Amino acid sequence: MPTRLPRGLYAITPEESGAERLVALVRAALVGGAAAVQYRNKSAPAALRRAHADGLVALCRGRGVPLVVNDDVELALAAGADGLHLGATDGDIAAARARLGPARLLGVSCYDSVARARAAVAQGADYVAFGSVFPSATKPGAVRAPHALFAAARQVLGCPLVAIGGITVENAAAVIDAGADAVAVIRALFDAPDVTARARAFKRLFERQVT
Image 1 (tube, rainbow, N blue to C red):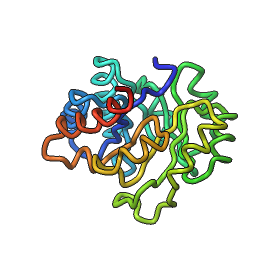
Image 2 (image 1 turned 120 degrees about the vertical axis):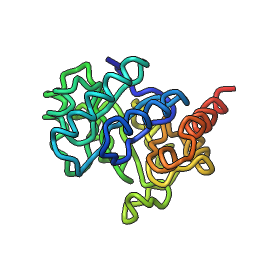
Image 3 (image 1 turned 135 degrees about the vertical axis):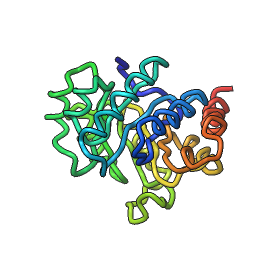
Image 4 (image 1 turned 90 degrees about the vertical axis):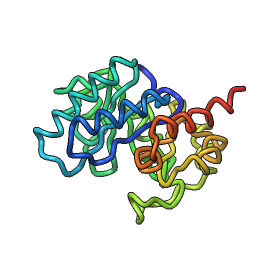
C-alpha cells in the first residue's frame, strides 16, 4: 500500500449507479494518467457501495494507483482499499487512524484552515485537502480557500496538499503553481466526452512543472 499520496490528478468518482459504468469511467481516467482515485458515493445502498469499492480496488491495484474511500472506514477496510478520506463531520481522525493502521492513507478535508490541517496531521492524516479553490457546481455553498493558503500550509506542513473545488483544465495550473501537489476533480474529468484525453490534459499540467 502507498505511504504517500502521489502527485498529480486525484480523480473523485461521480455518483454512478451501475458498477460496470463506474469501473469503465475510472479505467479511462487511469489510462489517461490519474495518480489516485477516491470512491465517493453518499446515496447508494450499502451493497452497491461495496460492489463499487471492490471493483475499483481491483482495477486500481492492477495499475498501481491508490484507491481511497470517502467517509466510510468500515467499507475501506472491508474492500481492502488503500485509504480513507474524511470531511469535517465524517468522524474522529485519530480513531480512523487507529482503525486503518499505519500502512493505509488517511486524508482530511481542511477547507480554508491551516490550523485544522495542522491538527489533522497531528492526529494521523497523511495528506490534507483545501477548497473550494474555485466556485464549485458540486458544492455551490462551499467555503472558498485562497490560493495563498497553499504557500502558508507548505511552510508548516510536511504532507501532500490537495486542491479541490471547481477545478478545470483551464484553471488548474493556478493552484498547481500555488503549491498544490494534487488536484481533486469530479465533473471536469468524468463529464468530459473523452475521459482519457481529459485526464491526460490534467497530467500534462503537472509535467509542465518539472520540465
